[in-house]
Length: 62
Image (cartoon, rainbow, N blue to C red; front, top):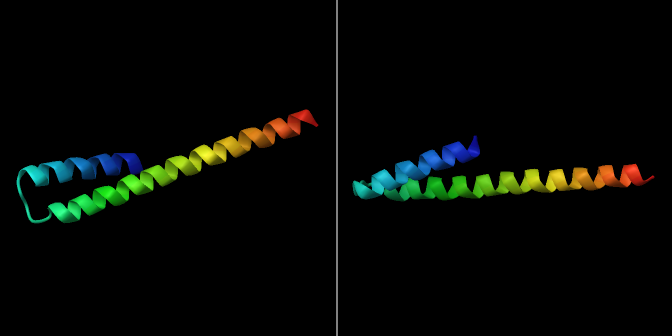
């Protein structure tokens, strides 16, 4: 969901930039926040998955 909203904001930013509108700076800030949030969520999921795999390996070895 975060990725979809970020891509939508990026498209909005590009169109606003091409049209030289006054909200381009705001759209750029929203896009940057979306990219940060998407990266944060993906890293969180990846780290949680890796921790779960390691936990399962440890339990199997006992």
